[in-house]
Image 1 (tube, rainbow, N blue to C red):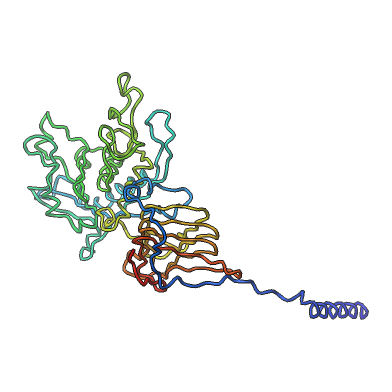
Image 2: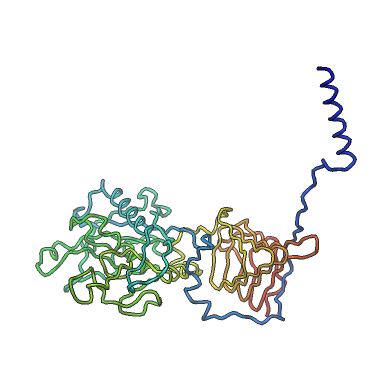
Length: 428
C-alpha cells in the first residue's frame, strides 16, 4: 500500500518537472484580432460611383432573400376598429361581442397571411413562395386607453354602407374624417352595416364588401348578412394590401412581372376562360385570395423601408430595439441596392466585399464589423439610426499581419448618428 503511494507521488513529481521544463502544460492565451473604429471619414474621390437611381428603385431589391431572413423579419401593422351604429345603438354587433369579433377577425386574417401558397397562374409556373412578413396588431392610441383600440359610434347619418344607387357612399370619406383616430400612423377599420332600406330593395345585394381609403378601410356585411367571419379574411387582407401599395393584377400593370393578366374569375366553371385559368392571388377578386408573389412582397417592403412613407408610419418600428438574434453575417461578395432597417449587428467576413447603395439603419447599440481583408463600400448610401438614437459605428478588425477591414465611402455617402465613427466631410 505504501509502495503504491510512493510510486504515485514520484509520477506526479516527474510530470510537474516536465511541465516546468518544456512549458507544455501551460494554457496558451488565444490570439485576438486587433480592432479600431473607423473615424475621421472622407469621401474617396478616386472611385467612380456605380449608383443607378432607376435600378435602385426596383422592388426586386426588396424581395425576400432566403440567405438573410433577418433583412425581412416579421413586423406588425397597427390597427384600431370602429363599430358604427344608428342613433339607437342598433344595426351592428352588441357591445359585449365587439371584443371577441375583433379578435377573431384579426387573428383569422393573420393566420391566412401566415399561409402563403403557390400561385395558380400562369399554369405550371415556378414562382417562388416566400413568407408574407406582415401581421396585424390592435393598437391603443394615447388618451384612449379605456377603449383599447375598439370604438363604438352612434350616428344616423354615417353608420351605413351603400355600394350602388343615388345614396352610394362607399367611396365617401365623411365617416373616416369624423371618427378616425391617429390615421396618419394607424389603420382605422370601420365595420359598417348595409343600410336597411337598401337591403330591403330587390335590386340591391348586401354582399360582403370592403374598400381602402388612404390608411383607413371600410368593411360591410359582417354583421347583417349572417355570413361567418372567416369569409371576410381574404377581403380584409386584400384591402390592407391596397393600403400598403399593392394594386389589382388581372387587367392593368401592377408593377410586377410575376402576376399575369387574366379573366378575373371568381371560381372555376365548366367552360370558358374560367375552366382552367383561375387566380388565387390575394389582390384579385377570387374565392381564395391566398397567394402573394415575390414581387408583390418586395413592393410592400420597398414602401415600408422608405422613410416618411405612408406604409412605414403604420408599422410598429422593430428597427429601434437591438436584438442580437437578428444580426446579419455576409460571407460572399454582394451588392445591396435597397434600403434596410436592421435589428442587430452587421458583420462582413474576411475577404468579402459588400457594396451598399441605399439606406441602412442600425438599432441603438449595434455596430458594423468589417473583418480583416473585408471591405464595406457605401456608394451614395447612408448609414444611420432611424429612431433618433445612436449606434456604435463601423469597427475595422486587423490581424497580426496588418491586414485590416476597410470602409470606403463613394460620392454622396454619409455616416450619421454613430458614437465612434465620424465624418470630416460629405463632399464628393
